[in-house]
Image 1 (cartoon, rainbow, N blue to C red):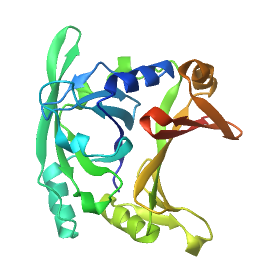
Image 2 (cartoon, rainbow, N blue to C red):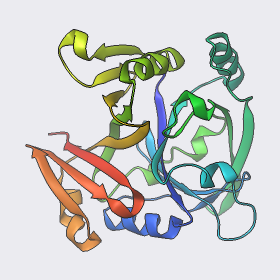
Image 3 (spheres, one colour):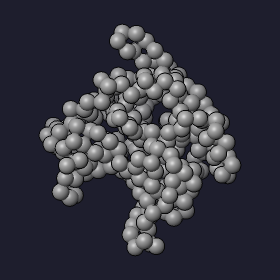
Length: 263
């Protein structure tokens, strides 16, 4: 059963605005990274899966795959410890993945520059038309999961679910479960909606909808006061949905965050 590695929010050419918004909401962002493929990013780390803002630099090489992808929540990335084995497994399951790809980005730790390196396997766009799906092997995890990047002023602690829509939720759920080595739960047979693809450390909820799209992510905080105290100044509306739960709509990034307190 696969585990979630990270969730991608695509800011396209507005990485500065995305960085400013999430900082205003009390997230601690890593310094801007510059990938060898022609994209830039900021991470919001947890001990497990993390949030990533990705975009393209204003000059120089610009990754076309990022520019061609939907704005906002648009990437589900699973962990792998062997990208080549994952490529073979996905191919054997009939998914025709793209060949493994290597890239890196510089990271400065204690004044010394290092190279954070990755090897990924991407599923083709026809796997799910609402965003990018791929597996990531962190070759240098010690340069990504750093203790100094885990303490968010707003108390952000974890990602617990991703919500997507599809015209054929059942087929999408089964395809996700096969590719991610997860299980399908819920839906009509269990008398509940949406369908849920259960992974090692989170769930993907798949709703019926007119088109494939990634619509929201569910995240966990120590307490909601850390983010609620900042939403007004950030110009964001917060809607209470249940005790200890609020929804934040980020229209400039076409992203919705369902926020829950641990207690």
